[in-house]
Length: 575
Image (cartoon, rainbow, N blue to C red; front, side):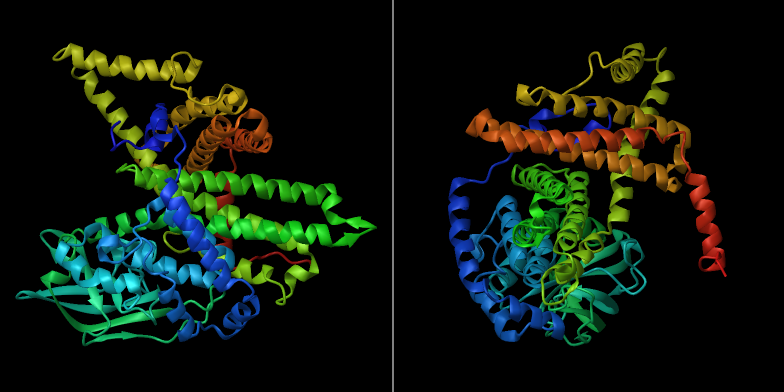
């Protein structure tokens, strides 16, 4: 199997690479056993401390003595290799661990996750042996806590526009600039810093910076909406001098480092989102059983059942998606950026919907600070913003597909000129393109999922049909808009949403297939029900998105938005 293959990028060209998603990835037995013991220790340590966590939220502060407890419990060692004193968890095990922490308290999960998912991930992926020997042991024990410094006051999603500079002076670099909203900023001693380097090698470079360097300062604790107990500060650098041994990766390749770090670490955020969903479902089901209205528990009411059922479906699909991406990482696949972005978007938005419904089931209690719902909602809202806003990630997902389709059409165009000079090559490209177009139009000879359990043929048929339409959809969008597709963000969002739904459906089909093979069909009634509901949702959403290629109200919406911007508000009133 070619490890450079991307499942979703292939899917957009009409190719289903089944070997990537079947069988569903499974955690190794020894890791599973290790995690059970770790999670038991988490429960013994963190259960029953809800009042304490609420006080942290009110004060916006995590006590130093608790951070020390995090060190003692090994919360900073998860992904660091055993060679350096870490646990050396696989991506699958790490994601599951973040899920468990998020069930207890978001600020704890964020503090540990920012360290492992992004703070020291660049060192793990790109560090030299000397760099790892120097820093990894202290990062494993938490003597050094790590932070990821990319965002700036004028540079958020547009990472390439950073203003922090690294100027070479002899064999040294001089760093100057401010970083904004840095998670762990106030407690970190190890910073992965991205700076502008106008060199022949490239315009951005990643550096290792430590707190003890002259010129490194951090600002006050930010007063945030959620995850208030986690440390978020500015990080300021004034004439900070570092040598070449502090360059992370290659000079000028900082953007590559940043993207690799974010892609690799997204299973941590996805795992945390799934953990939050499981906690919300636990709270909501207990509340529904205990709250009596009109002489019966509200769990008996149809609309409450509807909420709880959809929460379960979304959690299962999100867990399947996040686990699949973690499996890609562990199996050594190189190109999973689109799938990682999809898992982040899908899981964080599913968490938001799940918490909203859990709060609704709680009624007035959900609105009171005495109960955990409102804090959980505040805490989870950041997930759709940091580590790549979901809006920007949707553009990335769709435009990556468009780029692939564009290359295919470019190859086709050039092949027309080769028909006479190189007829075998020219007709080969033409015939392959024609075959795919015909397969997408008729369904005959098109790629499909064949490895799913036969009992799941209804869900598989939905996936196969939508996949054929997806390839046609992407092709049609590019033909219609050409290079202007970058500016057609309504259209690209629809494409991204279809891709998100199809990947989540493929992961869920694979997981239910694996469960049937493991436990037998009779023991998987609920799993099959989940898949039936979810595949129906995907069919309705994708059908709606496909139907809006030509007939939509995009221009009307944009016109109204332009008018509101010009007015700087809403111009109607009933006075």
